[in-house]
Length: 488
Ligand SMILES: NC(=O)c1ccc[n+]([C@@H]2O[C@H](COP(=O)([O-])OP(=O)(O)OC[C@H]3O[C@@H](n4cnc5c(N)ncnc54)[C@H](O)[C@@H]3O)[C@@H](O)[C@H]2O)c1
Image (cartoon, rainbow, N blue to C red; front, side, top):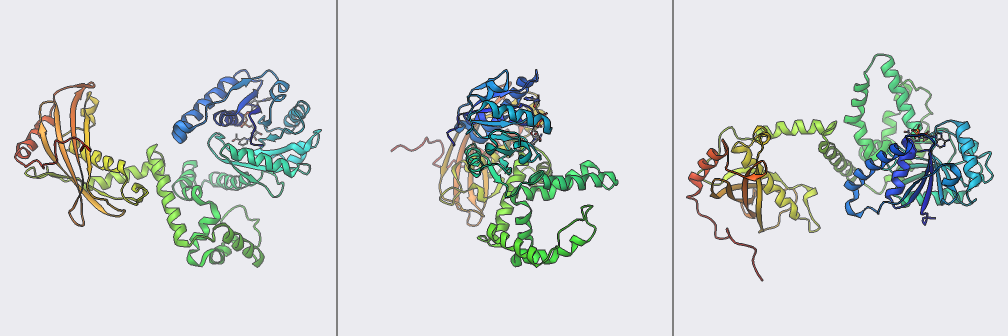
């Protein structure tokens, strides 16, 4: 089944366009039919979005893009396809007639998947000649990125169809969730719908604005949900006593008016046992401490990712971190009679390599951050950069002297080894705070530029560098400086 090489996509809107992008960028040819005159241009911009994201996710490992054919009718789109994904508007009559047309023109073994958000497959398949190959394959926007796809069969759907479709979706990087029972709106939309209805009440009753409701999720529960979903989060919240304890503690509030959705199941022994057993099956292999670490590491990763795009909890983190850093910047110019004490760092778990020591590129990162601190110290600020001036690194020579493990604190000092009108040569020395032993050294040659061309240091950089050099030129240069890489 995973040898599908051509898919027909019927309907190329928000969801159909997302399917087209996912299929093409997974190397699967697509025949697309959509009668709207602007359909192709919309789909092309969706593909461009997907390409941008896949470049970040996979780099050169992404499969080569397959071929997109825009067809004139449904028959042309489906007749040579190995798989059909229908994504036309959420209207039973439209879907029903289009599915019948697809059924008419495809070989009986070709699976037909509907992207419907909530229509029941039993109803959608009722009029088909080959109803056993129809399932719902309900994706989430943007389809090219979000892995979840709910698979729901109807009364007449063959089990084989569900298995084959799940295999195919898995082969294109998705997480198929096969529903045990056919139900309106499936699983995910039911959950989102409950949340949505409650949110509408909160706005309607003047309790919160839309922004406040979004903030209530994106700075809190939403970050955890992305990691674990509701049940795992509550299992951890129950602590060492686990899920049963959590349920007994918070069960009574189900009867309190904490929500407008007051039709709740009885939290009786049977339901508690079911939840506890399923929770054990889901995560019983992990201790609560393990789960806390997994949760916390994931949250750090998510907040760092949000920081990269300066959004939500990430933007908040940047502001807070900036304040912490400000507290660490000395008020006075450091003592220039010795190498400048410029930078401190803590070895993080994400910095380790397979030997459990700081990995190579992190040394360059720490030395680069030290250089940045020197440049800030001598006056290279945003205004200086905006006026076309900057400092480029011409050369770096790192010597790795000793390993360093997670949790260690390190410091870096910087000595000027040479200075002329356009260039400065630096020696950074990284030491372990605990023992003062040298861990690594880096020599760097930096060049000042104006409009990307070599140029004399401007004010105040030239003056501050001269002030440091006045003292540093008298410091001894260690004998390992000025050497190239050793020869064999
Ligand atoms: N938007 C979502 O977040 C979302 C998420 C999951 C599933 N879905 C489901 O996906 C399906 C499509 O939703 P959408 O949001 O992409 O809608 P949409 O309006 O963006 O796209 C529908 C597309 O179908 C095309 N179309 C109309 N009649 C057609 C026909 N006869 N033949 C072929 N194409 C035709 C339209 O031109 C349009 O481009 C719906 O069933 C919807 O419930 C939507």
